[in-house]
Length: 289
Image 1: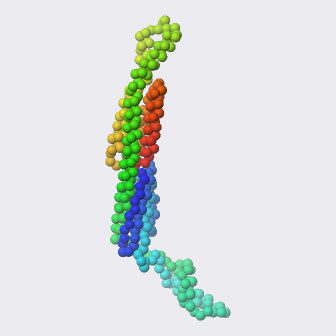
Image 2 (image 1 turned 180 degrees about the horizontal axis):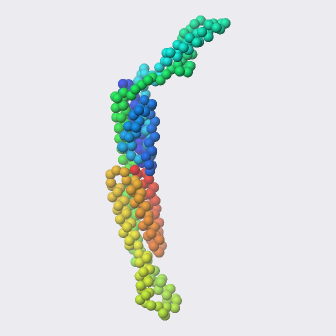
């Protein structure tokens, strides 16, 4: 399910920004981008997100802006001193030696490799607490966003499910007509043929067997039960996307069987409309956790 959240925390002038984007997916896929100083606690952060966000494609981005006056690099004094001595000695060998200008040397030296080195930092517990607080706020924002999306999805799924139930009720008026039409067609065919040796009792038995094969009562009962189960599951708490998908598959089986037994143009039209509503359900269920 689509979700988005953002939260900001501060610690000793540093600004920590946490951002989460989610998309629905059958599996859990967490992608994390964060400053290296937080890497030692990455597994803790991953577990926190996985527990509260659940499955799906999740992008977690953490940005750390330093306070005024702080820098991520510091001068490597030993290396700078070595560079200076070498450059000063080289300048003395030139025919047109310019006056010794330490500042000019320094500007050049600072552009040379290893003149600067990263500041060695350890993650302070207070900063980590600020980070986890921001992460918790961000996750809460994501879940609120998802809840709003979920309400819209629930409305769409409920409408399609109720449409299938309504269409199922529309089948009933055509059932007796369908059976009677089949009976008349069989009798008409027998009248057109030589029916002098027809065993009436055996004919009735065969006719009953044939009509029972076309009976859709069980399919109607099962389809109605699946629709009701779908509604009940939709109202449950927690992740339910996979369960709803399985129920939709069972609904599809009953609708297909109903269509194969229909033997009636109007019932076939109703079945087509049912399939259309079921496709809407299957499409939207993919967005449910």
